[in-house]
Image (cartoon, rainbow, N blue to C red; front, side):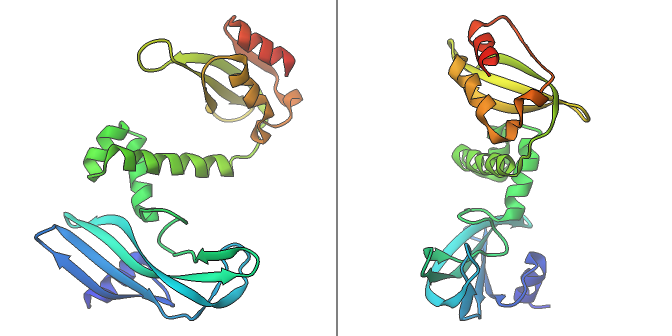
Amino acid sequence: MKDTALYEEILGLKKPWHVTKVDLSLESQEVVIHVEAEETTWGCPTCSQRMHVHAWTTRRWRHLDTCQLRTVIEAKVPRVKCPEHGTLMVTVPWAEPYGRFTAMFERVAIMLMQHCSTSAAAKHLHLSWEEADYIKERAVKRGLERRIPIPARAVCIDEKSVGKGHDYVTIVTRVPHEGAPFVDFIADGREQSALDAYWKLESTGPLERIGCASMDMWRPFINSASAA
């Protein structure tokens, strides 16, 4: 099997995407997988309307290592000019929109960060702390966008000191009728406005369906829950 066919199988690429060549540099300890597409018409990533390619943009994504070698996908990605949504880059099958890492790489990074600190995960994956935190923030954003209201038997509200000094965050834990409790909301500070933001979230759901709220006798929290 040729190296190009091997990587097409590994990446699960289908037409119109294909691997054109694979570069190996032992000096830089890196494998670069070059990917191109054959299609001349693409769908707008927002409305799916088909149109001709307006331009091509070369982009790079960090992928999981090949053996011990850092692996990168480099691709010429079509850009379409939609009359309604403007010029946009089409979606590639190996990464989330606007991402700098492949979906496989982000999945492994998140699994690792669920069991260790961001710094430890970054060291293991040969990332900077900022890159690891970027992956974590994207995962949290995706999770929040998918979140749906879950009827709660109760919510537990508390503040937690973070770092040095008197810096606090407000934490709301949701106790559903079925299943284990889970952290549903975190906000900077422990003022009334921090908790007020939770009651206004669409994902919080109808407040009358929350059986009770448990908290310490911190006046801003009491005021917020009473006003809600």
